[in-house]
Amino acid sequence: MPHSEPASPPRRRHRQTVAVVAAGGVLGACARYGATLLWPTVSGGFPWTTFWINVTGCAAMGVLMAVITAMPAAHPLVRPFLGTGVLGGYTTFSTYAVDAEHLLDGGHALTALLYLVATVVAAVAAVWATAALTRRALSLGSRS
Image (cartoon, rainbow, N blue to C red; front, side, top):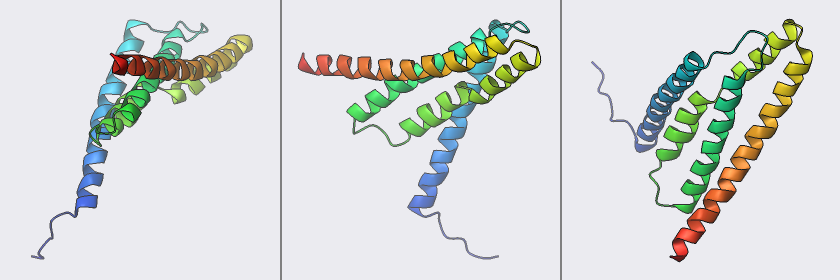
């Protein structure tokens, strides 16, 4: 039986990162799935659930990035767990594309176009606004 060497620190860190991303992804995907069960989209209607999932996920990413960049001592696995894992599993731009395709196939081209544009605009605005507000709140809090 060959002797196996213990995993090197970079390899162990890689495994830890993959594990926390996977665990976070499970949590985020379960939250997204739960939201779709609570608020199903009506066929041919505006996909509000997916829209709000993506917007709130981007808003949470803005907060997370502002907090993590303000806290250089944050644990190195926080960002992969919350950002890539939880929020990556929660947000769903693949479902966004499928929703738009279903709207187009169902003859709802205007709704599909509105959905495509509104999601991107709202998601970018959400991440920008929450990052800016969080940075401001953190700077006000540090003055106290």
